[in-house]
Image (cartoon, rainbow, N blue to C red; front, side):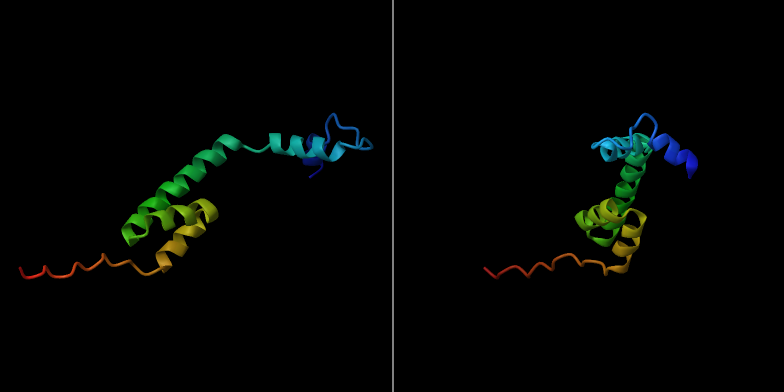
Length: 92
């Protein structure tokens, strides 16, 4: 924890008025954004696949985007949508 705090406050005057923002941006710079992007893309792709299988493509992608792998469980717990039934043709 001391290492994390040391890296977050490196080069920051803690008595300065904008110290919070400097520490905040230092913390944001430590986040592995590329890995987070690719993992999120994988979660949404699997959510799309599960949503397609359950007949809820957009809903599957949305749940996976918002909740990640937990969204997969949400979409799997929902019942399958049945395709709309076409009425019989009119006599004529």
